[in-house]
Image (cartoon, rainbow, N blue to C red):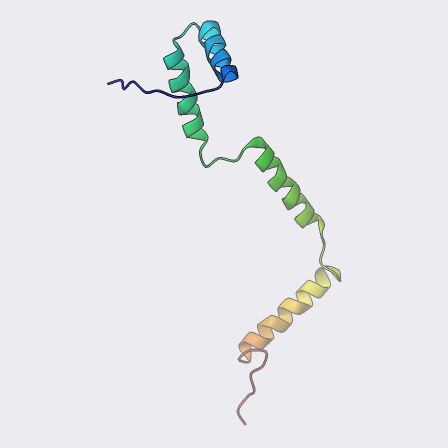
Length: 95
């Protein structure tokens, strides 16, 4: 079932629609249907620009090494584990 609708678009968009219809040898309605379907399928996906931006952020994050290197990290993890076993960092043991 087809439903007739009315949209207002600028002249440049009409030109692109007409050119796409002519080059693909399909109706303007088919161009619009396919364009909407492709747009709908991209909803929720990252654009190329967003993807590259996120990759740059991750690269910067992983390039940063914690001060003191892995030994400092290992030492801090050991302290945290010991604190958890003893009831927490500020916990006082009962006599």
